Amino acid sequence: MELLWMILSAVLPGIVLAMCIVFIDRYDKEPKMLLIKVFFFGMLATLPTIAVESFGQRFNIFRGLYGTLFEAFIVVGLSEEFFKRLVVLRFAFNHPAFNEKLDGIVYCGIAALGFATMENIFYIVNYSAAVPDIWVTRALLSVPAHMLLGVTMGYYLSLSRFCMDPGLCIEYMKKSLYVPALLHGAFDFILMTNLPLISLALIPFVAVLWILSIVRLRRYYKESKSNRRF
Image (cartoon, rainbow, N blue to C red; front, side, top):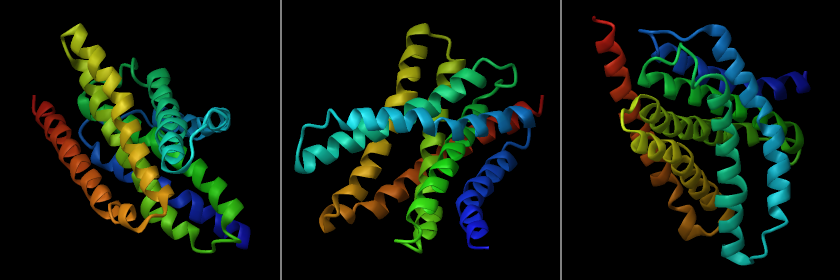
């Protein structure tokens, strides 16, 4: 019974948020099997990420805050966003179903939630004995943060997919990696420092992430709605 509860508490947040994203994409729905594939490979993307992070930590020669900066931005932020984006580029970016800007947010959000779900399983199974309420903080903070970073990634990936200027397309493609990687690094850095003054930045930082994501999602949602009128 306890094992079942751990699995449910690890899996449910990602599935619920994924269903919310799918519900928002109501005017030109994506193929269900493609969404499942992206979510599943988002989960599997945790495996190479763990390997890369373990390798990258060996090169962290810094101490104190500099060491935390390196781990947060390079070891964790960059590697996790790289592999999440790779899933979307591999399975969805060139798919015929990716035919409007909202789709970038949908696929990147789903990939990010697949990743977060597998990460959640790992944390809850391994650390719930030491931190019984870890599922609460993961459900309310970490899993939604992955989704919000996916929204940011999808926003730029869609701009790259549908822009007409090749140079601008490349620039947006780069931004689809380094902007969420920087935001991810900042999020993890705030959590890793354990310094009261820096920790105070967590709430406004998450609030800004939510506001930006809602604005971008709303913009593409309106565009999707408008396109269905014709």
